[in-house]
Amino acid sequence: MNNDPAWLADVVFDDQGLIPAIAQDADTGQVLMVAWMNRESLAETAASGRAVYWSRSRQRLWRKGEESGHTQQVHELRLDCDGDVVLLKVVQQGGIACHTGRASCFFRRLDEQDGQQRWHTTDPVLKDPELIYK
Image (cartoon, rainbow, N blue to C red; front, top):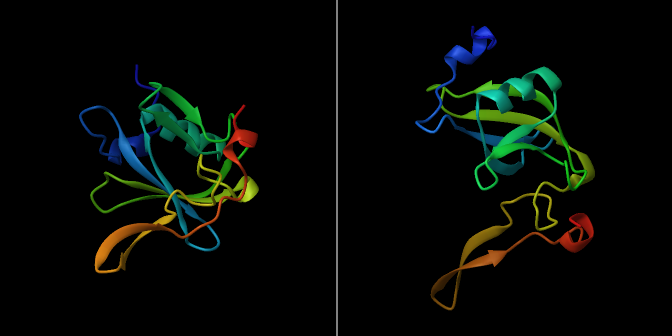
C-alpha cells in the first residue's frame, strides 16, 4: 500500500525518479544551490521542515548539513507550472550553502576580459572547507 502524501501525485519525477530542487534564501531571494530530490527526500523535507536531498554520487539521502552543520530550514516549498521543478525557500544556517565554503554555489560569473569570455569568481570563501569537512 502506498503511504505517500496525496500532494506528491502532482510532482513529476524524471525517469530516474528525481526532480531538480532549487534552494533560495527566504529573505534575500539569492539562489543558494541546485540539487536533486526523490519522493522520499521531498516527503521528508515537507514533514520535517529541514532540506533533504538525494545524492546522485552517493546514491543515498543527503540531509543538508549532516557533515557541515550548515542545515537549511525550509520556510516554503513551491512547485513550478509543469510540476517538474521544486523551489525551497530556506534559511541557511551558518550562511554557507556551498561545499567550497561560500554562501552560494553560484559564485562564478561569465565576464569579458581582453576580448575573451572567462569565468570570474565573484564571491569570497567564508570558511575554509578543510575546517568544515573533516
